[in-house]
Length: 228
Image 1 (cartoon, rainbow, N blue to C red):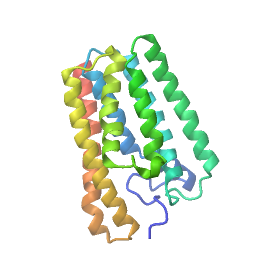
Image 2: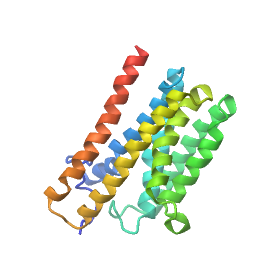
Image 3: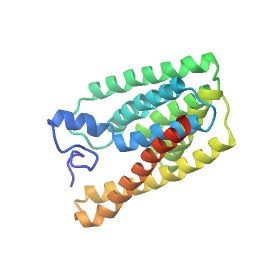
């Protein structure tokens, strides 16, 4: 059985163990997807570059750091080895404070729709990752909503406090991509934990790489197209 996730495809093969743990626990390709969804939301309306950067930073801290630390805490196993719970809690709470500070600033400024989005995201952040309520919300639907649809809405709302038809289209795309990601990731993780032959989970790995790459690089291309 796989002991930890240091041999995952998104973990660098170079550097010290602590460096590889630090990069690995961020799940950078998946974090990149969520940040990309928030960018697409911003690009679906008239946007300010400062606000676009703000929503990117918000989701990097909320999902990239806080959510993944909580996920490690909520896991029945130790996916990242013997990282102390106190360090995980510290990193998660500090990151969450930074993320919510950004969100609250713009919510009070002129984007009040960030309040319900922030409440929903905060709920899923703890309920999904810590498997609260007997794991009732640790499912594909919760993942699609919190990691796919809501980031797109947040990206649009922080810009204009509105959700346009283009925002809804992007949220559907994000929802589909998130569903592909989570269903494939679950099967991939299960095969890895069973120490399955590489050829058995290679196809799943390719899908994960392809999905995350298409979303991230597609968003970069769309941003350049819209901004320049």
